[in-house]
Length: 151
Image (cartoon, rainbow, N blue to C red; front, top):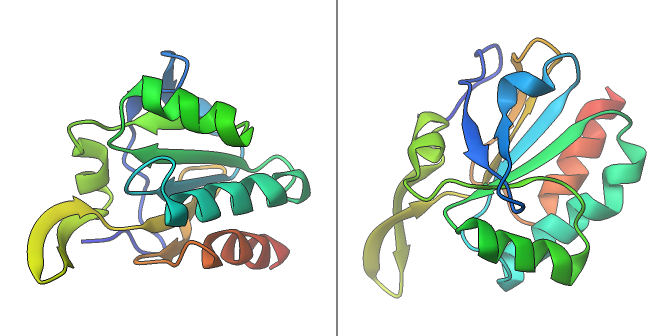
């Protein structure tokens, strides 16, 4: 089940695109947007990540963190290709996506399979959900973030 407003963020520690461990708890004290995307360097995921890159300068100290099942090397290529500049975390066993309600049944061309459900969650400085966007569109993710922070 997706996280909802008022929920405590499940903590995690995952490898980023540089092979460094990033723990959600290490970002306490600032707002954090965690967004889940299915696959690095695909059209929708590129739209979503580049949109967030483009608004990053207008969201103050808010941290932006992307999570997908891609391995760190693929995340690194994605970051380098589009100069994203924020952590892209590797959740290869999708345990974090499951904890956040961002893993589930999808369908493409009539075939059902398990995968990332594109979603985003904004946490306050204490790690409490202030906004949750399950099944968010790639273009809406940066717009939603800016609107949420504007109040």
